[in-house]
Length: 93
Image 1 (cartoon, rainbow, N blue to C red):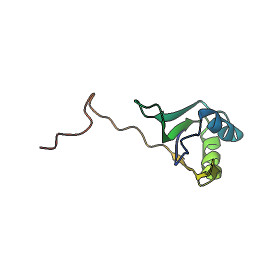
Image 2 (cartoon, rainbow, N blue to C red; image 1 turned 90 degrees about the vertical axis):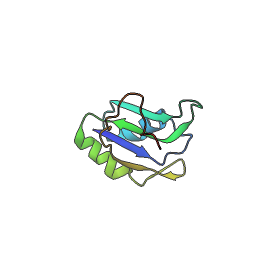
Image 3 (cartoon, rainbow, N blue to C red; image 1 turned 180 degrees about the vertical axis):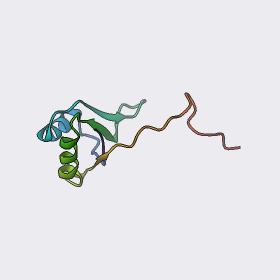
């Protein structure tokens, strides 16, 4: 299951997320979303766990918990919407 992890402090690293999520099971991947120009964290990321029951336990235990002084949000990620390549939104005129 792919999980959304939000309200992260900008100093949270993938190692920090590995440490807290590994208590609930095997982790397939972790990805903190970063600004493409500055490289700074955008304050959210995704954690993928192959076992759905372990992921559910992680969501229940970690949603609303504190990490580096912030109450993090953890829930099942919504599927990525399909967009045409290169287009972000329709023109404003």
